[in-house]
Image (cartoon, rainbow, N blue to C red):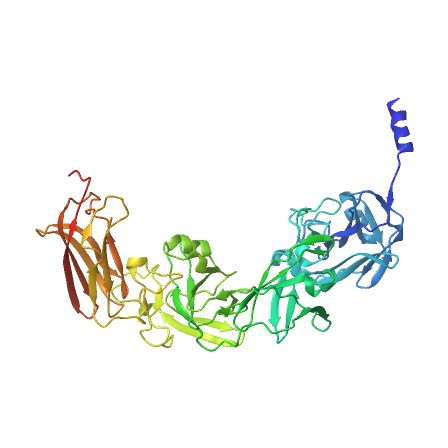
Length: 551
């Protein structure tokens, strides 16, 4: 009885047939050698619709060599594996297989695969072996899988190496399938001409919508391009303007909502900038840490000496690209370049996070000596030959201490223009003015207190003693002690540390055991000295008031 009822259900079931527009190329195994799957090339098709599709009307082109698909009913959301005749038995255990005696070889390096219904293109893929995520996958044994079958653009961003343990998923859902994934469509580069802007996209022109000038906005000024046309020679989109954009002003290029490959996407805003030719030493190497602490990382800091912003897109530190996207360095500002941004921020407490830029990688800088080079797209901008002996001789362990530039106006390789950073500020100054900079040196050393009274009562007013220093050089070492008025030592606050040419030292009004010092008259005593034996002593009195002290 159950069997008859089941058969009746099958007999009267209505099957909806589709026309093949939702058959997509879903997986490609072009180089099966060295893998765990059978050593057979294959292409997997997916019926990404809600209807049964007869494949009899479909044609597959591989590098313009065609094979006609036979009658075959492919159910909704099901797969079929296409391969050469000799591979049918090897792949049949993974799913339904259609084999061909005239199968065209899939080139390992890349090929174009087209799926047609008569002369109507249903899907097309031009894959490359560079789409794989690593050299191991590129060497063979791993398929390329489609990430989102709903997104009809077959660009590199919608394909990746299979992460299945066998290296592929023939006849099964892709290991990386994600229907929520939308590949990032965006502008990769901009060229500004007299009255036009050329846009480079990361997506083939075939997959992009028809653009009009009104699809774009340029701000400030709410400028709308008057034309938008493709340059057939370069594949770039050219936006025509009715006037030139101002030199040295940064603009933001944005788009209105656009349908790309059938899905509404918002292209990310893009910074555009009319950059003049950069001159040698417009940007200089300002600081380098080549011997970091174990938990730290190397970095190079650069400084924009000019009065105008400079776009560092396409610049190189050695042979490593700083950024593929616009990277504006404001005038008279610093930028830290590193491969490990988080480590710089966490190990350098004073680092200005907004001025730390993470690169994919930076050159390797040896602890003893090396060369730092900075290139713009036009050529060399600055270079520095460094060596460990540039550190101050009185520094016993230079690990974690950077070399800082003394003067922006002197040549990078002028002897003495790079010195050890002050240890008082942690041994480096990532993202802010160098502790040893000499561009604003005074003629006479001066040590003074911000206030001659201190009351550590937690009201945020004069809670700590501030000892300020302004020196005529940056290579002094400091000793700073606090005494009672009777000469009893309270705290050896600073011992043999460098502090640069200016700064301040704070005392929290506690002795060396961490106990609060009682109210009374005190004396600060500060010694500054250099490796040549010269020294100066500064001292002064102040009053400490403990409003709630119990001693």
